[in-house]
Image (cartoon, rainbow over all chains, first blue to last red; front, side, top):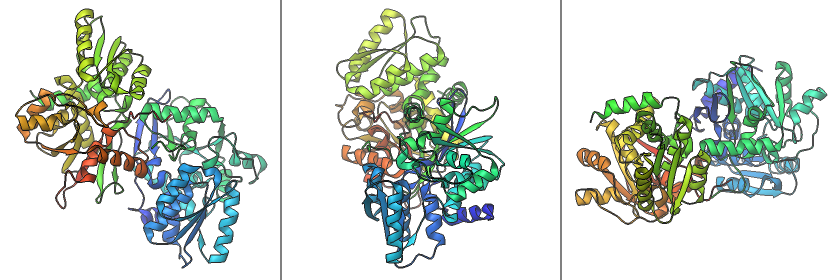
Length: 304
Length: 304
């Protein structure tokens, strides 16, 4: 797959539909200055809008409309993108997504079914809906159009002047980091950060291929994919990615520090990459310039 | 006063001490695209850090240290700047500042006295402390060094590529907008936005000079100055500023929309300028490019 071309095409396709999210430098979060991209300012509060717009604008959407299964953020993004493009959309959300994320999906105008259980259960129902109604599915992370859409993020950041040698990115199902790996092609070091309590990529790298893992913890409603996407795994294995894990306590601490230092109220998943630096799961070399991607901000409970 | 030079000097002085806060464009907040500067990412959650650093770095700070009276944000900024520069600091805060702002000041490491009543009462106590201890005062808005520090904001925004014809800025005591007027010198239209329930600038423009006004409403703990600063009044009157007022309900609605559209959780004062656009207190001409300054994010209750 010619990922560079796919991502260039995706960037041109979604231009004007997604927010060019702001970047900044901070010396208030870690012992050295770091670069940040505040992707939680994206429509519906996470990077997922990129993959959703890219998928729906590239696909031939049938009369049955669009269907998605989501731990929350992807569903909100697909609902928002579908409404913005004039398509009907039905989103299946696992109950564990929580009321704050479910409210974001409701505001998008999409039809919504809350499914008891976790992400995999919602995915089953979405697949059944797809077959019965002839709707088209937008996969949350393991589809080329989704990955290419998420890949526009690192490309955009580079156009905004990213200087870092190393970029830390949180991993759930792996769509975001797959996009980053696909764009970087080794030109920049990408570090994968997972919660210890849902570590599908780390487990897959250890096992030599995607395997099921148990999912729990503070970031599970965004990063709790039971199994890493095959696209992500293949890119990560081919590039020999560095993957690190952080405990829930470090994630909560990173979340608190983003609020206290810069008034950015993110969800745990959005602070996961920063936690790796603060907690020492990833220790950069002296002189290594580091960037952290802040990727989502649909916390529960909703503060308003 | 040669404000351009003062502000250039202030910018050089505080470089590296304050955050270069991010800017962005949004089409999700109003019927047309607007430019935003997210100054609430500044140290201690508001623009006040600029004036505080500029004042303390320019002044000859005595052994008695630094004293400030503040509705909250200025006190937090002076406490933070003093600690960062190695000076003792004592902050007098009116009780109406609320626990969230008081917590920000406590975290700065400054000594803190909570004064029953409103801003003017805290100012009285700060003046007494200044005389008794030989501490130096940093005024919240009506001092040249404070105004020059706040003036670095519009200068920085221009360096980041600000294109707007018109910039909307919330007004309390007037330090921030005075800085903007002092920098712009008429080259760009500055619109002052006040809550109807604390409108010291509007009242002063009507009366032909600063007068006392009653203060109340959702933004009073940040914008509730009883009387507009003389520096602000003089600049505003000389430049024939456009001043508009918004009701509390519009401020709360703007606050909600910043959270829903871009996950920026700000305090009411921080959303006040946006409210003028959304509520129609200021109606731009067709083709007029508009920018909104988001200036503070120490909401109560603290969401964490």
